[in-house]
Image: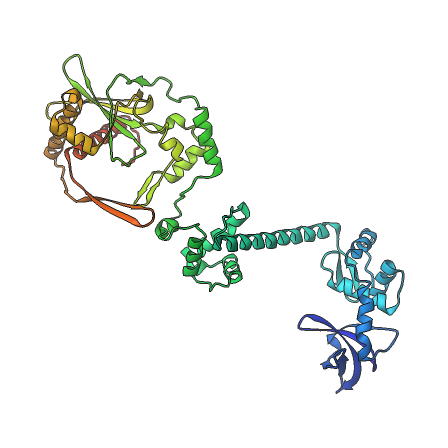
Length: 478
């Protein structure tokens, strides 16, 4: 190196140009940049030397201005296309000749700037640069496009967040889901904070705490003020996928063939469904049949959702995954989409409904004398509440002798079970409901005749199912 030599070096990752002023010790040099600031450099820190002339520090701005006129990164793609086939490495001077038809020190330094900043077409190898393969260039471009898309989606998401926080109505996009999920996971599992969640909160100038993440989700209208964190952490699916909803709608519009095409027609029976007034999924009903020999047959009808299921389809697999409908104070988490669960899968008054019906004849003590189980068709006659049934039993409504007879058989069954060693544990049962996220009601349920009636009939159906499984060697859940 000599005095006046123009050199390039990096300081904190940024490119700087300076002129050599004087040696410092055995190996170092003092260089002076265009602002007159001196730097002590080892030769290893020098990334480029401009050959062919010497400079004063005051001439550096003019030099850089002339270099800038050559800096068109797109020109490297043209050079790469010419060189990639041979795969031959080129020096900065050779690239200057190829790009600018000139090997003057200014085009040479411009070629160095282009090549050293390029991350797509060329890679440095000693003092030269060799073209990357076409496959590698394609992969780098793909990665860059993906990163650009990610950054754009991040910015668009933050824009929607800011708009929502100021009261503007926004429509969340599919691309927002991953960031919303990250915020939810951070609020639920503080020890597993993702980079995505922290990025969002940092961009919004929020301290990255689980409480702030929860507050943000509430402010965005994505969570309620009293979000059920236990339900969230349980990972029980609350919503259905688009595919499952689409299949449910398809079955509503065009039901599949009934797998039990020879259902027993019980539409002539009077069927009572008894539930709370708020119940939307009516899944059981009761009937009484008078037989020619004077005996009475009790019928317990259970709604049969398999009428609308094809084994192994998306709806079937989703129902298996959920296993049951959850009843929570804030509402229910259904096993099937609500359009199905409260529609054709429910025992709706006045409509012909598929069911699994348990017909049971009891002896005078309440013991099962005979039973049968059939896929059936029923037509619910009355949709009653527990209070309705209690009133009917108390008044002894003459037109509804069947409900009184069912109640009598329920008492007989209870007595028979006690004689067999059953234990009645009387525990207060309550119903807790939360409405509008703020209104909490707690109701203590009386052990009324109607509730005892329904309970005994369900226990009876369970015993019949158990007997059937034992007789036919079928494993059944307890």
